Length: 298
Image (cartoon, rainbow, N blue to C red; front, top):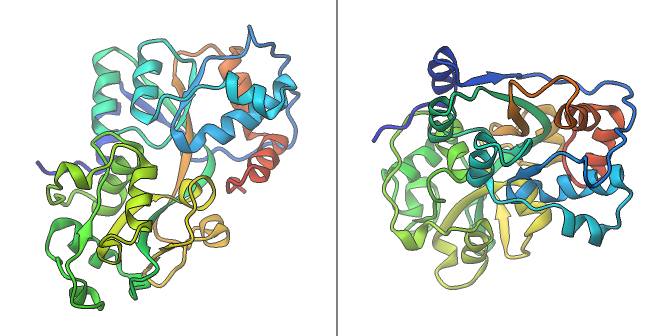
C-alpha cells in the first residue's frame, strides 16, 4: 500500500475536521508557574522518548524528587497515548506527529487535534561502528528501504547484505520514517524479526556483533543519544550533515522534526493542560527542557 505524506494527510483530514496544526510556537519570556497539586495536575501521556521531559516538568511544577516524578508520570508509548487522548483518558500528550491511522481515529470520534511543537528533535539512522559507511544520501536511504539497494556496495560500502530494520506500524519512529523520509514511497515489507516492538531492541540489534555490521535502523535523536546510547553504534551523516544539537537547532540536518504537545482543540482556555503547555513554552520551561537534554525551540 502506498504511504500518504503527512502534510497531504493533514490537509485531507483537516478539511473533514481532524487536526489543527500549530507549526510555530515560539517560547515566551515568562509565564507564572501553574499552582498544580497532584490532584489538579493534568492527565499526561506520551512516547517513550518524552518520558524525561514529562518527569522533569512534573518534578519542577510539583516540587517532586526524581524518584517521585518517575512514579507519578506514566507514558504508554506514542500510539496508545493518541488513543488515550482521543478517548478522553489523557488531557495532553507529548509525542511525535500523528500517523494517518491516528488522524483517522480522531476524525471517526469527532475529535480535532491541536498539535504544538515543544522541543526540536531529529530522525537519525544508525549503523554499527564496524560498518565503514559513515554517510548516506536521502536517495540512498530511500533505495535501501524500498528494497532497491540490498548490498552495502550499492551505497559505497563493502560487499555485504544490508539488513534494514524497521519499526511497527503506528510507532512514532515508523510514522516519521513514512512521512518525512519516504514521502509516499512504498517501503519494502520487513519480516517480523526486523520490526522490533521496542526502540531499545532495534538499537541493541545494531549494537551487538551478530551480523550487526550489515544492519541499519532508525530512531529519534534524543532516545538514541541520551536515553539508550551505545558505544558500538554511530549516527549516519545524511547528505553530509551529522545530526547533533547544533545542526538540529539550526535545521541544517535534513530530518529535523519535533516533539509535540497534542490536545483536543476543544480543551478549555483555562484548563490545566493549556496552563502546562504555556509553561513548557515559556523561557523557564524551555531552559528546563534543554537542561534535560532536549533541543529547545530557540
